[in-house]
Figure 1 (cartoon, rainbow, N blue to C red):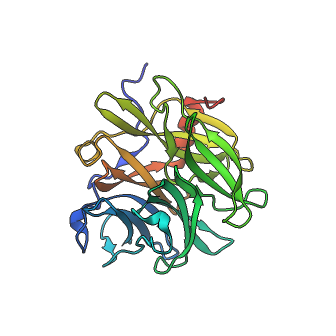
Figure 2 (cartoon, rainbow, N blue to C red; figure 1 turned 90 degrees about the vertical axis):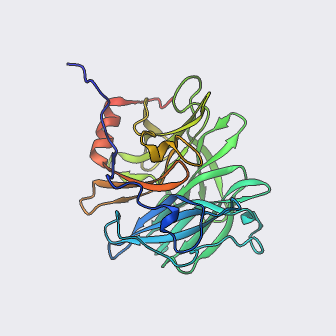
Figure 3 (cartoon, rainbow, N blue to C red; figure 1 turned 60 degrees about the horizontal axis):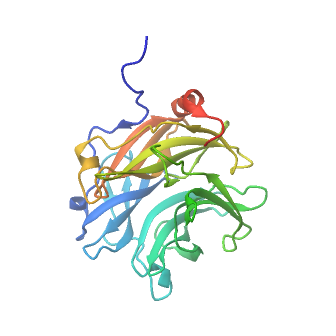
Length: 319
């Protein structure tokens, strides 16, 4: 019998959105696109993008014991732009992705630094989300949607990012011995062309998940319509020791804007995950996403189910 509806892989939390500007302890316009991590004590920390009425963004931490409610928000901004020392942050810092790097015993935060030259990728390290070691701009504009892999690949750190290239906006990977000097640039995943949901412009969403089958990437695709852009989510899988090699790519999107809080806001019809956490069972995901560039929401998923879906619905050429 033919199924009458698409399979649901991401399950929205019934009390979404979980964080809005009204929750903030100081005046803000919107909160969205948070990086996420589970700390050693089990606390979930979201590093939220917070936009003020100038249109400039900074980052602010919110903590929860269960990752769903009871959020405790820092009383003042956690990480502010510092354009005097880092001019690339002139117009704000945005969209963090957080990776714990065991070798460094630190969290690596890749974020977008926005200035006259456009958006570029900056990196900061921290142990406690109170003090930060900025590494400065590591990818020149126009580049964003970046995350560091949690371990070296053949002796080098690896960064996934999305530069804008004359051929389109594709996902790339680059390598570095020291987090400052980057090279070995390779395309990981190309935006498709034509009428696809992910034609012309794609980008990494949360940091990829290391599984026995490969690096599982949740990525976003942008489809331009007569009514504006639609931001939706898909899956791809990459080799563990050669992450530039794509093993499988889903043909269809698996999560898109449906609810009022995802369709109505500063940027309507947008779901944009930047962070996820993995439960104690090693399978349950909580995916944190910006909803319409206005609030923060969360959905749950299963790593096993995502891989199973990709095995059935993915294309081995990744085109």
